[in-house]
Image (cartoon, rainbow, N blue to C red; front, side, top):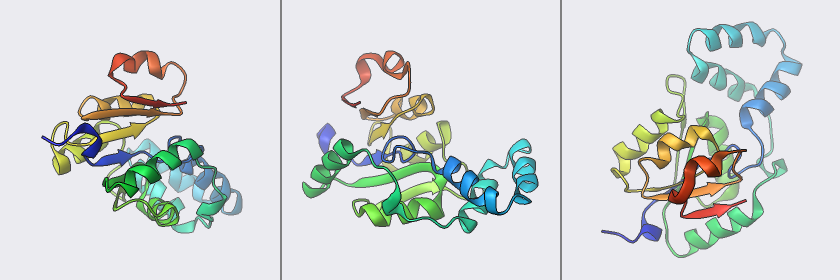
Length: 180
């Protein structure tokens, strides 16, 4: 069995790698310019098609990944992990279009797993996708929110980054590394 620090490492994006939320950024930047899109977005939200409205916004969003605020201490650590050969995967509920731009800017990730028009890759769906690809406990996971608990339950390494309020108490002793 591989050492825990050698297993592939999946990294959440919103609130973890970046200190903002791309859904919020997309909504504010796109809807202020195109308020008529709000109707379709609300219809998709209330009919369970969150992934579709994320895609609709992503196709209209114009942003520079260099302008985002990154968690610098965590990013420095990821750079070290990549330098020693560890496989890093950006695994996010944000839309693939946005995630690929950020991954390209950061330049550390060998793959991107993200939401698309049909699947919102969050919580249990993200856990299922990672287990399908790497096996139970065959990956490490870096996250920051209650939605990541389902992923950590199936991960071989638990890394908590920029935790939301009360999260560390819920994770308990299972956290291998914490970046606050």
